[in-house]
Length: 314
Image (tube, rainbow, N blue to C red):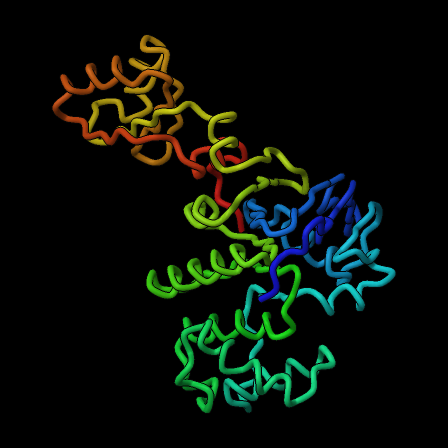
């Protein structure tokens, strides 16, 4: 994989992007950029506009307003030329079941104008990168879900892209497959490949992203490194309180939250208490033998839920 060139410009710049479908604004005045050799995560609930943003960036969906530059090319005017320097891992695998693993790489390489000899030369390293070095002749229907996802990642790298776009790359994977993909993505970034990913896994974003943006209703709500976003938008300590209480956890929160200057959010039978100093709350809870609690540092999921809400999205 090629390292980022010294003085290389941003592989993706989006300025004031707008996309509407009828009366609905799906992407609303969105601006972001991906730096050379960084991993940038775009987070948001279902329907936030993440996939539409990626499609506009690739020239697959025409925006209503805004400017996009992808690998130095204006999009959508020269989207085809820009995509020649981009790798894409879509949300759902689109491998050809009629071909073997090696043949899938070969056919995909031809889309980028690579001759058969070049793809054959690259295939062993790509399969090894995906942990599939012994699966060159295997049919797609004989692969597990994790193997298919890793092959899709290998396929996206066949053209040695400057920018790799991944739409929820580890959805549906078991922990072993997720951790392997995480290691591979970290390796790519260390070698200079820029990565833009969308994910619903907050731990994935915290582990992989140099910077991230949280979006909802088509707009960016927060941006920065994971640590910066957590420090800027949430109290440092979280105490999760759950158990039996005469008036339910809502009653407990009313009785103790205001007195202890605790910001509480209720979810089912659990009260999430966000505090700068957890000591007073922990002292009080130690006397409540009918309650159980967990004290932990705030994380990115807490910020995500604070900014986008706890209501279920479909």
